[in-house]
Amino acid sequence: MTFLGVACKGDQAEIVCDTASYLPNARRFARTSKVITVPHLSAAVTASGDGEFTVVAKMLAVARSSEEGMTFDVWADEMADEMRGVWKTLGEQRSAAGRAEIAMICHLIVVGFSERAGEFVAYLHSSGRDFTPTPITGVHLQPMPVSYRADEETADFLTQQAPNFPQVDADMIKEARQAWLAQPLAPVPNSVGEWVVLAELAREERSLKGPFGRVYVAGDLLHTRLGVGWTSTQKVWSFDDEGDELARMVAGSEHPASQLGPCQCGSGKTFLDCHLAEHLDTPCRCESGRPFRDCCMVSPTEQAMVKA
Image 1 (cartoon, rainbow, N blue to C red):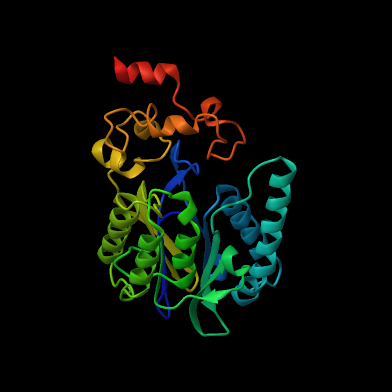
Image 2 (tube, one colour):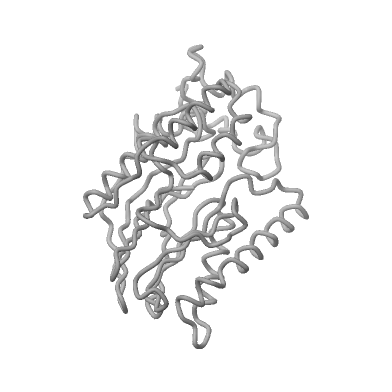
């Protein structure tokens, strides 16, 4: 998952996303454009979650949009069955290759001008709901800052992830879930500046702190606006992804800065020589199927450079 914001405003719609792309264990980061505009339908498509899913889902959606006589309404209606097919195929391929199943919730979002509704609309197709299309009202944010109300699916996913965080008390997770659902709804941004504020808040509350449920928000922030017959995209912000900010963001992950940084337990040892050492022979979280020791562990050369 990553930062993604969507809001429809009658004769226009807005999509804002960061450009961070990373392995499930955050070993490597890269930058990518996540929104594909479809001007002939006055529409756009974006996806979040597992990298393989997002690539295949967006490519298939764009391919479908080019079919003769296609309209946005028909296109949006077809996505549920298309995404179910993508999910099933990826699952079968991973199983055949002995790889882990997709552990995270994946989303596909289509936004466009609906002749049926007479205005711009957006639909969320979530793997957690069998890709049944859910109309987006107000502003949709991923990851949702804890200062604003999460939807039930996001809150439930937090609870489901509890076994992955044995250091966090189960009652604490339950209380956090209830508090999150009691927060006010996020406001619909009325300017680019307000989108940036929401993105920075999501980064601070979901990337840079919190013992669990961490989602990385990084790279640049791109703002896409859709109108009838036109689209525009511009970079509106760049996040600080270096030095202390990077160390805060990747703490506890398998990124080199975290592996060679101090363990969060306060032992004074590096994470690699402390709590991470317990996982050297377990399957790497990048989902390669190989042990961490033989996959994403920092090399002796990298270790020597830090100790020099």
